[in-house]
Image 1 (cartoon, rainbow, N blue to C red):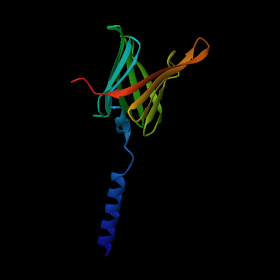
Image 2: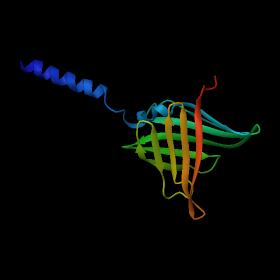
Image 3: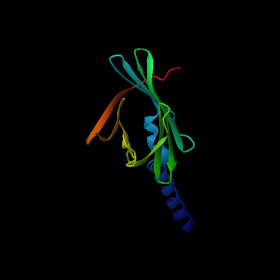
Image 4: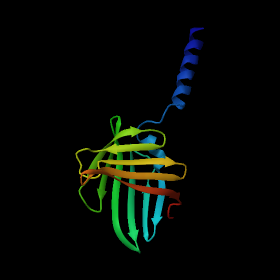
Length: 155
């Protein structure tokens, strides 16, 4: 009888593990793909790779009237229980933000030592993605939002 009880206990643990919350970078799998927003002559495109090797890569570009006006490269990688968001905007120095909040549809990264922004965040709602940056600017808290929609990735 003992082997049967052990087997049932083992199968219960395997089943529980199959339904466990994703860990690490897998928690951001919902971000993978292509996102875009257009406002007048300005278009911002953002693209994310699927999680692999404890990391995800992202890139964005802002185009106004067929002219590149901004771009950035991002890597999100696991660091213990946290995720680090490493960004290099338009050729500037790298800045690292660490996760302070992650759930099934959102993530917030923070670096209080940085001037602006101090927070970078993403929240998904179906095929919509609200990204924002925020922090102190001229004595007030400033928030800049990027309301993206999911689009097909270029072939």
